[in-house]
Length: 573
Image 1 (cartoon, rainbow, N blue to C red):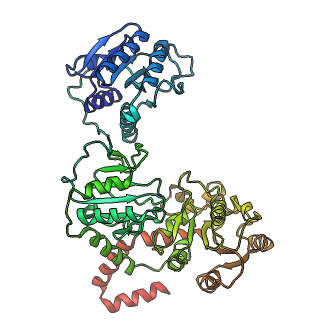
Image 2: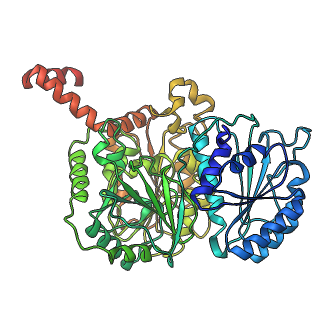
Image 3: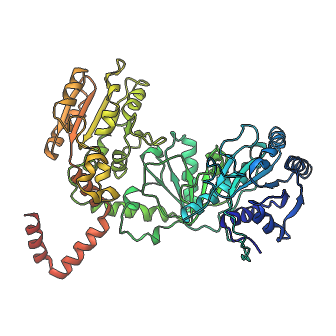
């Protein structure tokens, strides 16, 4: 029988699935549920040591002799401190020792609780990684613990191996009524010298690319070859910088709120790149992450394998195993994308409308910087020339420095045009940067000024339920001149920028011609004034194309074409 404690069950289940069965245990209260559980499972090979210093050194000897990981388990207080000398030895000898220190409750340190020490910070050279497995009060916390435990265990073998530390909250109950361990997701890490798993069990394969450096022609060709051989498709946003043959800009499709996703569910998603600003992720049953850093990053919540190797090695390996298939999956996505774009509704004057009118006009071979969150999301709905490199500060994902980043990039090539799209809060936060004396003539910046953090007024944001109340403090409305028509104009012109502005679609259409006029000598700032309600309505419109058209069809069927047109005229006023 095993303990009923869920956190302890996770550890035991993962030890078994990773093939770790050697354990040196020391007596204690907070770890007795773990010890009793593994003691009752004959798969584990246990040794006892009352002295934790000795226990850890025993583990060093056992691990060195067998070449296998060894777990050491102790209770709280100074018991865990006694592991340090041997863990230091293990660190410098790269011995795979897993120190499992236990605590009754993760909230106890710092509260004068007996036998509770703070292990949140450890010396640099006693463990390759240290993680806290805390109490899980919901499914999200439970999944987080699974990922952290996998991450720690995998580090035992990585880069030559070494010790790791898991601080385990146990919430002692003493109940031992569990007959079988839960089926806990095991994450595996593969290196280029390993025997890699097969792909035969996956029929629908996608490749998702987050923010990524420019792809080499070799890697692009290898991914295209993979898509042809495995009937796969590449899903991206603009920051992916992927421009291969089987690319789909997936925000419009996966952003549809009422689209039946069953036919779009992947069996396997191959995950490349880093953080993405595309919140509309595809649905997948399983994920493999491929990255030279080999880090465990569970973007889709179902990571099963990490491939610590160059991306081109991964694709070249699998390309050798299979001949070409008929490409149908990409065609399915491409046809759906075209269908949605043909049915785009009337979009209110907003960042999304600006993107719809402007994305295709961004100059060939230029560079585009998009501010988070609204600008990046809006522009991800519309295609941009494949010769344009696109970047966004999605690493830290803050509004701090998008204009400074744009200006810094523009220093690299004075002959290249650098475009930027940012919101008002992001611009005014970073406005000092346009006064930098090194700013050249190659910047074209659009500032979408809605007078607030419009994200908090979008229909899809929880704060939207507060209505205008949200403007006061949550959306930070009415700062920076409260949509003044003169503030940015004077500031920009006094610094030598050519200034443009627009408050309507008609004004925008006229002004955009000057924005793209290469005869204008100097950098340009184009301030576009929009309304937060229009921004929200635009987002709703583009995310409900499927519902809107289904509703229109139903109304037409019920009323007939003539009556429908009459009703449409009444609605339009």
